[in-house]
Image (tube, rainbow, N blue to C red; front, top):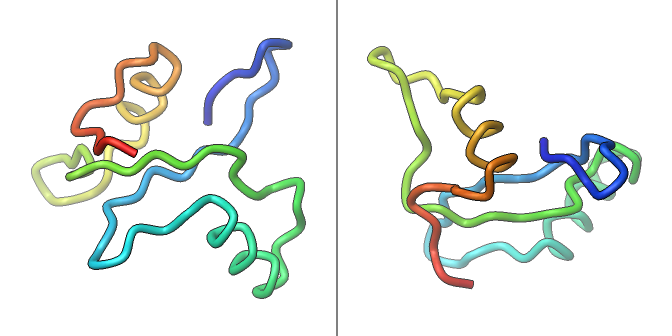
Length: 79
C-alpha cells in the first residue's frame, strides 16, 4: 500500500502486464465481479517490467511498499 495525504494506507496494484496492459477501471470492475468490496480494491495501478524477488522467487512486498512510499518504484513502465 501507499499513504494518502491524510496518512491513511491505500491499496496499490503493482502489475507486470502481459500482451494487454490492464487499466485501473478494468481491474476494479473485475474485482467487483469476483465479489471484492470497493473498500479493499486498489485505488492506484502501477505497471512494471519486473517485480522484486528473493533468491527463491517470492515477491519482496516489503521492497514494493518502500518504493511506493518513497515515490521511487523501479522498473516502471510509462503509462
